Image 1 (cartoon, rainbow, N blue to C red):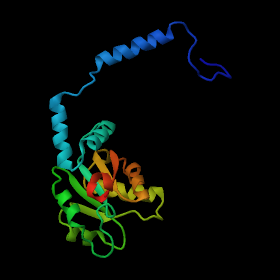
Image 2 (spheres, rainbow, N blue to C red):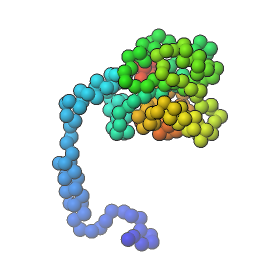
Image 3 (cartoon, one colour):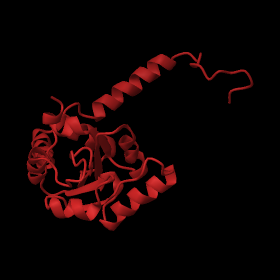
Image 4 (tube, rainbow, N blue to C red):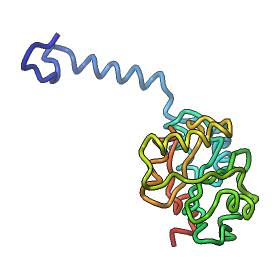
Length: 190
């Protein structure tokens, strides 16, 4: 037990660095450095089904430990801006290719969730996005309520947004990850 004034620095006990080396070596021997080829192929296929590149999928999958069962887009990420309520054709085609995952959207004003859902049948469900004036708990309740209504755990959901505050949705939803719209829709980056 360290006493007063102890900064919890490294131990001065003899042999500590050798024991640490042996521990790291034993761990490395137990854990293979490579993923079996069959698993890589399955994950490549799943990343393609979700419309994601493999690196983004693998990063999110590794962090969450679970497969992705839903994609939650902001209306900004889908380029649903203004009164039109319809997303551009490139975004619609990208979502149309998504397989075995919910495609959800949180819709910013002036658009209404029912309008957006009707104009974009490629989406499975929509809800009003949290307002910028909402408190943290209000934002969390709105997002979690929407996800719960779809019977999805937040840990199997990826948030895709395009505005600075939308990245906070990941923590509010306890989501698996967050992707900027330009990373999910590469054509938006250019």
